[in-house]
Structure formats: C-alpha cells, structure tokens
Image (cartoon, rainbow, N blue to C red):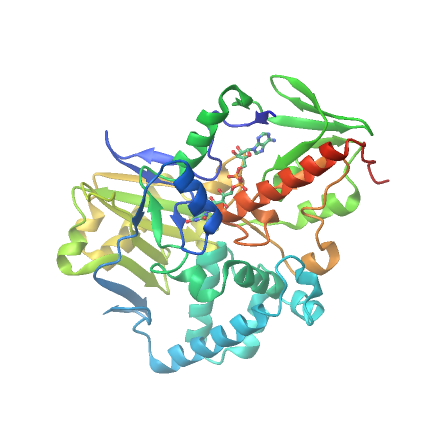
Length: 430
Ligand SMILES: Cc1cc2nc3c(=O)[nH]c(=O)nc-3n(C[C@H](O)[C@H](O)[C@H](O)COP(=O)(O)OP(=O)(O)OC[C@H]3O[C@@H](n4cnc5c(N)ncnc54)[C@H](O)[C@@H]3O)c2cc1C
C-alpha cells in the first residue's frame, strides 16, 4: 500500500497553524460532535485528547442593526421570525428523514426536490424576510454556499447524513462540540507517522492508466503499478487527473457538477480572551456580516484569546477579491462591532482562503446543484474498474465532515479488499 500526497504535508483540509511557541489554531476542519463515532474512535485509538468548545457565557446575535445577548439555544430574535424559522426547521427536518442517505435519488419526492434550489423552497415556504435570512445563514454556515447554489434534495440529504439541523448547527451536543488538543491535523500526522515510508509527500498524481489486469498511477516523482487505486480527493479535483481510458462520461459529469464551497477562515489572536470578562462566550451571529459567524477559538488553557470568524459563500467570494489589508479591516471591524474596540487590535491576524488552495479548491466540502443526485445517483462513489473513490463528499453518514472522510475511506478499502480477495480482474466498463 502506498499513499501519494500532492502537498508537502499530510492533513488535507485539516491544518494547524502555530500562534506562539506552544499553541496552534486550526485553519481548516476542527470540530467533532458526539455522533461522529468513527472520528471519535480514531482520536481515542491515536491517543489524542479532546476539549470542549468554549461555551460559557452569553451569545450575541446581530439582527436588523441591533445586537442582543442571550443564553441557551434559542437566539434573541423577534418572535415572528423565530416562529417562521422553527416551522421551516420542522418541515425541512421531517422532509430530510424521507431521504435515504445512501440513495437520495430514491426519496419519494426526489424528482421534485432535486428540480429546485433551497432558495426556491425558502421563498415558497418561509413567510418573513427575517425567517428567510436566518435560514440562509444556516445554509451559508453549513455549506459555505448560498441557498440558490444547491439542490433542495442535496440540502435534505446533508441534513439526513448529519442527523438534522440541530446536530449540524449546535455547539453543545452538536457538530461543534469538541476540538482536538493540539489540533485536528494531528490525526493525519499520527496516522502518517505509523504508516512511515508508505506515505510520499509532494507527489501529485497526474494520470491513471487502467487495464483489465492492473492500474498504473503516474505521479510527479514516480510511476506505480498496482492492482487497484483509491482516489480520495474532492470530486471536482478527480476531473483534473487524466485517465486512460478516459473516465466514462457519467463519472466525469458528476465531477463537473460537484461544487466546492467558498470559505475564508479568519482568526485574530489577543493576549487573553478579554470578552469572557464581559460574560460573553465569543459566539456571535450576524445578518449583515461579512463575518456572519464568530466563535471563541482560544487554546484550552486560554493562554491567548482567539476569535474565529467565517467568511462564507458570497461574502467569501467578494472578500476573496480584496487585498489582505482590506479583508483584515473588514473582519476586524466585525469583531470590534461584537466585542468592542479591543477586538480591532489583535497581536496577530491569520486567515485561510481554501478556494486558493490548488489541492482543495474550496471548502468545507462539495455540494450538488439541482439535478445532480437524480441524474448521477451513486456515480461519485461507484468504482470504475480498478479505480475506487473515497473522500468526505462520497460519504453517506456525516458527508462533508472528517467523520465522513474516514467512513468513505473504509468503504473504499473494503471494496478493494473484496476485489483483491476474489483475485479475478475486473473489467472496465465501456
Ligand atoms: C475551513 C474548514 C472548516 C471545516 N470545519 C470542519 C469541522 O469543524 N469538522 C469537520 O468534521 N469537518 C470540517 N471541515 C471539513 C473537513 O476538513 C473535510 O471534510 C475533511 O478533512 C475531508 O477529508 P478528505 O480526506 O475527504 O479530503 P482532503 O482533506 O481534501 O484530502 C485530500 C488529500 O488529497 C490531496 N490531493 C488532492 N489532489 C491530489 C492529487 N492529484 N494527487 C495526490 N494528492 C492529491 C490533498 O492535498 C489532500 O491532502 C472543514 C473544512 C475546512 C476547510
């Protein structure tokens, strides 16, 4: 077994960045939730520790120009907006339960749901503009995409895959519950350490040639012959490798349709988490942005204070075009609006625009626009001869998350082992 990695590091969409000699922050994926069993098991197996996301104190919500504090899970929004959002959540969660996560195209109303965007549904079923804005914020936060970007069926599939809107959006008890001490990149680093020479860095795969008997993988620094290959990269990047024979049109077209989200993860580092003294937990949501979501991302010992802000979807697309200084000013302006003037004067500011990354091209993950699921079904993970597909976008449970990346890898490895055990060569369709 050999792992060919394009970057000069392991971890992919997880990446630690030091903020001083002892502490790091994650500029990629960072949180783990209590129902993400596979990644929790792996963290334990690797001997890594978890710490809870800082949650103690009041959360802020900025809505229609006014900022309010609240405790608990229900934001301090006008009652008619809350009622509108609650009924939308109830309906969407109920619809999601009808979507089989391993085969969304078989949902009873799949054709109807896959022929519209989430935005179309929100316009029809959410009465107030405020309610639609809050629902849009949920979409931006979860997908780094606008409601008009994605298929309603994809949205529902993702809810089902992750266990519903509360699971996806909550800190305590939800997908943002824990962080890994020392950062999530340690998961990949520890696995790579155990694999040793089987992991080759700085070795991008450019071409995959298959015959009935074997597969030849052409990377920058070597060419490898094997009995099977697992391509574990975002679907859109699978189409940037060349194949001989070329991929069937169906497989290439699903790769053309899988869109990577748009997110810039921004952090400001302070001498201490000063907002905690004001009884704030560092979490804030805003209907204007451009930072619409903030978290306290300080290290567990709070030796430094770190505010985390996400620029997502259209805000990421717009601010990604600005100069770093202009972007920094916009982000720090949001932090200062929520947490006071001290937030405008960090010791350090750091950010990562994942659309700029050659070997990722957008995050958090990929999503399908209308028509994708019903036309292409399981094409994103169905093996093509000796080529097998993995990666978070091919997962059925916790699709788009680290947990889904792991289960997709195990599923692909099981496929390969079955083929190797059978010993008989598989034919390439067409
Ligand atoms: C800002 C951000 C926040 C996130 N937040 C969370 C979170 O809180 N919780 C969570 O669970 N998930 C989160 N995610 C998503 C999570 O990080 C990903 O779902 C997960 O890491 C995907 O793993 P993967 O192995 O499928 O893909 P990747 O991590 O993308 O790994 C693919 C690997 O393949 C390499 N590669 C690409 N092309 C080639 C090639 N041609 N040849 C060789 N190598 C290649 C890449 O360099 C990369 O190392 C976040 C992601 C980002 C960016």
